[in-house]
Length: 125
Image (cartoon, rainbow, N blue to C red; front, side, top):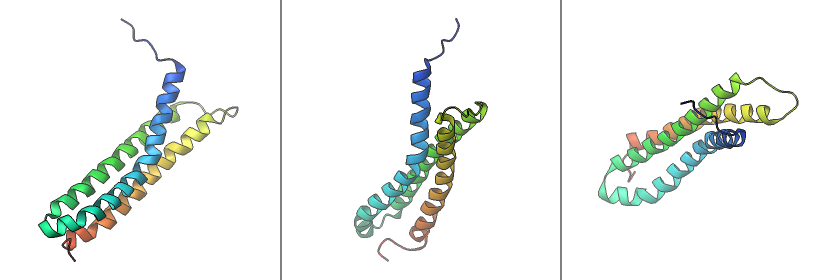
């Protein structure tokens, strides 16, 4: 049995979704970490469970990793396509894929640097 190729609209929609995940996942992961950690710190302080804060950091880094993986796969797929001067699609897609990779690295660094204090201090400090 031969595999049928998806229609071009479906692959374009899938590619666009992967590009948006690559661009939006890293900042949303950082936002998630900030919002949830601020709301959890009072509970964590009373119960003295720093593992919860470490778990939130790990979850945010995993979400950044999902964005990086989506951006990397998009980047590799777009490198195989020839650049076309007539349409703006491949240029925009390449920019979004590269932006997703850069954002992933930047926000992973921001999340790790923000989380250093949870490793060195107790939640009540």
